[in-house]
Image (cartoon, rainbow, N blue to C red):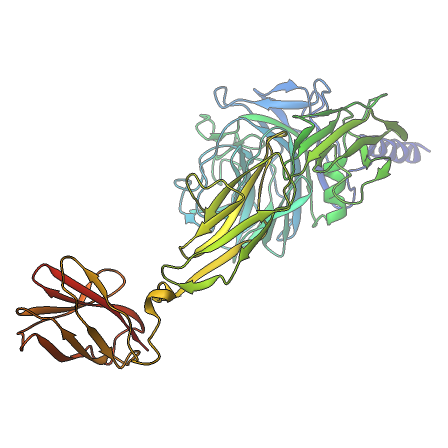
Length: 539
């Protein structure tokens, strides 16, 4: 009878110990559960209790007092748990809630060192035990984790070996849930239930860590939670901020379990009020965040009384469109319906861009672009290839330059702006200028000459025109030696020759070569102060 009584007492004690673990904590493979409810006891029933050295009891993420611990670098605070001989290798999991108040130096992922220099800076949440705790240090390593407000670093540690096996630069502001899952030596980090990074594998066997290293191994005897690589002189690396609900498992948690650990919080609300973090009337493309004051519940957001299908089960909701929004938060099996918040997204008319005529033309020509379908009460700013066209604000605009034309329209009543979804692409594909100037005389196969300066009446002939780069030039009325120039549309002289007069008559051949670009060129005859010009087309 006495033996049976002892067994019953032990079973009752074990049952009582596991009863301390919340229902959302997966019991299968649980090595330790430290909820920090006024102490550092392991409530998994495995007896891995911690000793508090400096951290102060603080409120948790739900506002419950004495339900987390606040650690301070200045006070060298840490929690020392039992000596770790855990042999869980290569596949295991950590989970904890964290609220850091200090930055961390992020090393290069995969970087290794024979010491902590260049790899470890501070913000150690869980100390990585020395590989010798598990056997040969050449084939084993302990695993720890550092968290700062700017990122996460996963560490592996053994003799003359520290490795950053995973580095994730990410903002960690306020309370956040982190799960580290190793599967076959490969670490993955989950932030608030979402996988954000998978790290690098190692040749060593990697082990879950939660305790200190004894003096015969590395003399990091004052390490554990909130401090790492810390010996009797407290000269290690410390964490600054809040930590709560540390759990360690000897297996990989699945996505459903990770999500449950993130969503599970203590819910004590009897009402549900939602608030907005900014204006509820805004321009289309913006948003407002709505938030329920119920902590630790489950949530379903509604728009106009209908459940929203996607991204609607968190405490906060991002409202982007017009409607009346409410939230149903379930707390301890009680559904709490919130107040309604009206959100208004102000939209602009969708401008239609069009062109009057062909959008591909020759240099010197132009085209009219139109912005329509706006109605009154809008301003327009035209852009060419993403550059604002200064002073070009009419609904219609004449353009001569190539580019992609768009508009930004502004509703003068609401102040909301909108970039046009369509654009007009204008191309200038040839050197052809005003067709009236370069029209070829169908009888004489020539272009008309333009007389400049104080010239007398003359006759200027170019033939053949068009041509492939060689043509004959005839000119009457020459009174002295003259100069012949051929000029491109950029104003550059590409041909120049001085020719003596011959009884007031010129006839010469101009050969521009075979490699000239097709287009229209100006042929210029300079005779003293007189200048005559005509155009020649190369094709």
